[in-house]
Length: 447
Image (cartoon, rainbow, N blue to C red):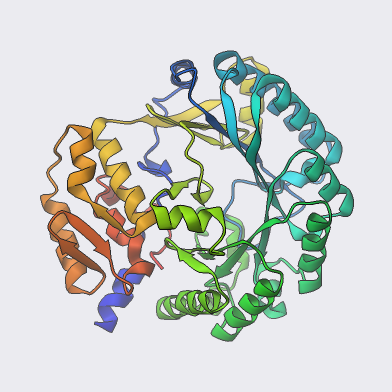
């Protein structure tokens, strides 16, 4: 059985932040589709907005984000101007909608500089209806958080800060090319809380080079001492064929599959011992946090930022590589900053690819989202709401194999992921992914 679990953990499978997943997007979806889908949104439909900033001072060795190292100021200033123009282009079609969720990601959004951040926020406020009390999240590199930046973010109405921590041990930080001692992260947290931003998220990682179980426990203890409301503990995805800078990592220092599985369990045990609720695959939250409440009540959602309480009718992405989600399908902007900037400068949306959803895609997407969020799903309930009846024969055959391995339970139309199967929930979800067989090599390992 150990060898079978080893094989399962090595399978390459999507993270399911969308369905269908990004490798299935096609250039057949264009800016015309993007514009049409924006225009078709009901006037009462609330929006979620995502702003992507693809710049950093340098690339960390482990990074899998759409970003690049930029030293000169000019491309950053040009990009900021293009973002403002993209807001106006989208607002012509959907500016009357209420915005209930706003998220800045990257890259390093603060690399724009305080003046440009303030300008972009002002433009956004000019063309969209940003409702009071909205969730407003800003991703931060702790090394660049100053009191000046914290004050600005507070003034702009940021309600939650998400800090990239990864690991607190020095030898792991050296191996991944991101040195930030505990005191650096502590100083960032204190600055944010000084100006009223007290909802703090930490992003941590297991599966990193030279990382041990003791490093995981040390990192959890130090992280918990700063009392973040939420922690995401991601498995490092080593994909040097897709992210060439990851070749700087010595592959001989990476933990093996069974070590990764043990590290994931070590992290979960340590965080739950610190009082956090386990959420889905890899998130943790204080019991009184909205994410934990949503998980308990079956209202948890999943999107490109991970687990969320965001239930807006559509997600509109701005910036290079940003993905938008509409009832009709997904649209992704040009991934390269230059191509994105040229499209926006030409007064056209920067959509480069995407996918239109079929009725069956929506059913399968709902099943996958509930499995990823709730660790169980009632197939009859999902199918009954859809009005269509997919043939799940092959899916049930694969689930029966997972059940035999102790990873899932089948009870009539109800599918449940076991505690043993929690680290493998992506494999349970993949049973319903009809696109997966053609894209397996393009994903990270299951655990």
